[in-house]
Image (cartoon, rainbow, N blue to C red; front, side, top):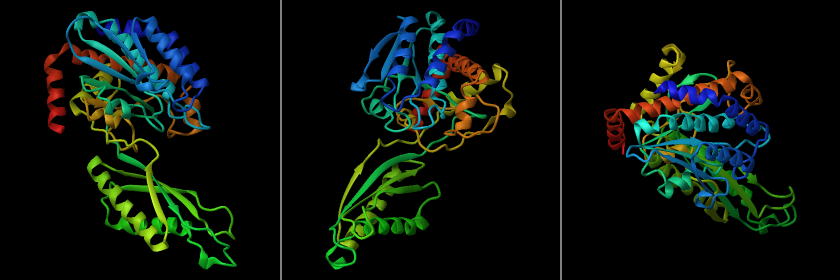
Length: 387
């Protein structure tokens, strides 16, 4: 059966590489991925998938489904295809989408034997307001048995952890005045922002080691001789769990309230991006993927232990179904994500070959789960215990 998966992916290799090159050469920001959306949905429709476009009224979101017509598990592959401002596809999303779509098309070739169904979730804007968050909130993954994706990198790394995150904006409103003639008439909103930063810096001493609080001043006044009547700070608040992140958000809110009280300002808070939950890797499923890498020729000493790579919207999916997010080697030099060097190498032929290799590993993983009920039972047992 795996030979049929391999044959299907390899017979479509030229098509898959062409689509990946096209998306890489035409980078689009989150929720603006209209070219990528069109190419990806057209390819899935060509291979017999039923396409639901504009999921949750998100224009560039889709769910593509292929049902065997027989009972069995639901396998989900995540496709990401947004780019970074100015850098383009420096996170390799032009590879991610075709890893998942290639895997789905490869798996389709054996679905008549295994039963079950395949879904490809087209999830825009992973870098900002990730569509997986509203999809998860709407319950679109609750009937999924396993969710799979892989991320390009400079090495192989097991699916690990990510940080839960809230993105919060603090607006301070004061009163302007001439900074030299009548400073005593003013209420300095910028002072409130500076007090907020100082309070957070003092707070860090009492936080757990997994806490991350980092921010910027996005608005701090217009001229040195005018007391700023409006100032804004934006922060990311993160930790290893949603529970502790919620606690941190309250602590930072108290800092902001104190800053407003000290300066006489009024305060408004809001979330300016979606909240991400932590990634909960399903270790049983992760081990299956690692075994497929071994089967495809990767040596154990080439695969590193999973690490924390910040925050991602797949965490919200992992609270609803067993999920993995391994990293796979697509470039052969040590370049970090979100750099021009990684972007350029991720467009080369070796990177595209690695994309097809990963599509096979993902499809093999899904096939193992579809064809071995006891394996799926162990994956679900771990997921239930973790919840």
